[in-house]
Image (cartoon, rainbow, N blue to C red; front, top):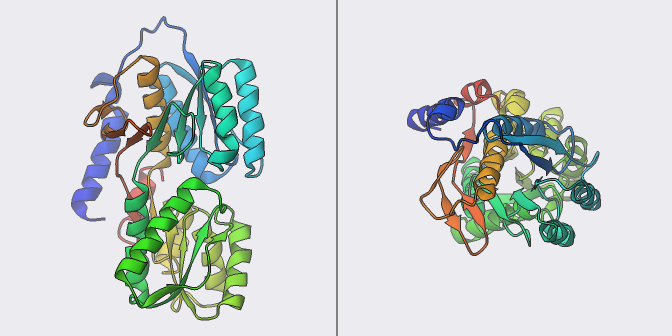
Length: 336
C-alpha cells in the first residue's frame, strides 16, 4: 500500500468517525429503532468480532437495534435455524454472511415473505436477498491475490488454494478469478490439485497444509481465501522451516497475522475492513428501510461512492487492503 492509499484509508476512517454531522442520514431520536440481527458464519471468530464493531457503530448512527449471532461451528444448517428463529421473532432486518447460499435460499425467501429485509455480505448470489454489500469485486480480489502469489513464486511452480468450504460462495468466486488469471498470465504456474476446504479454522488449515505437503511435495505456493487459513498454514511452514521455500499469501487479519508477516512466513495478506463491512450493512439497511433509490454513483454512508448492480441487487466498492511489513502497523492502529 503506497503512502497516498494509506492516507486515503486514514481519511476514510476519520470521515466514518465524524460522519454523524456531515451527511449521514438522520432519524428522529423519538422514532422506535428497527431491530437488525446479523447471522455470521461462526460465533467468536476474530473477523466477525470486528464486523460486529461496525454493526454496533452503525446501529447507534442509524437508529437500529443491532446484534450478532452465529453457529458455534460453521454449519449452513445451523444458520438456517438461526434465521428461522429471527423470522419467528419478527425482527425488521436480518443481516447474513452466508456459508452456503443454496442452503439458505429457502429460509431467506421465507424471511422476505414475512416482510423482513435481508442484507447480505459475501453473498452476492444469495437468492431472495434485499441487497448484498461488497467492499471489493470478486474478480479484483482474486486477481490481486494471484498477482502477489505469482510474484513471490517467481511466476513458476505448483500452488494450491484453500477455501472455507467448497460451497462458500465468496471464497470460491475469488478462487475462480485467481485461477483464471493464473492460466491467462502465468503459464509456468500450475495448480497442483483442486482447492482444499478448511481455511476458516486455524487447526483445520494446519491439518490440510500438512496433508498437502505430504501429498504434493513440489508445491511452492499456497493461497488462502479464508482469514484463518494463512495463520494455520503459516504455523506449519514456520515449524518445518519452509517459509523461505513456500510462498504463502491470502486473506487475513493484520493483528492476527503480524508475527507471520514480520517473519516473512506470510508474504502478503489481503482483506477489506470487516468493521467497515458491518457499518456498511447497517447503512444499506437504513437506506432500504427509508425507501432510498439505489443507483450507481450514489453515496452510501460508510462506503462512499458505490456501484450498484440493480439486476443482482449488489452494492459494491473496491476497497482492497494490502497487508505487508510496510502497512501492517498502520492497519492495526485502525482496529484491524
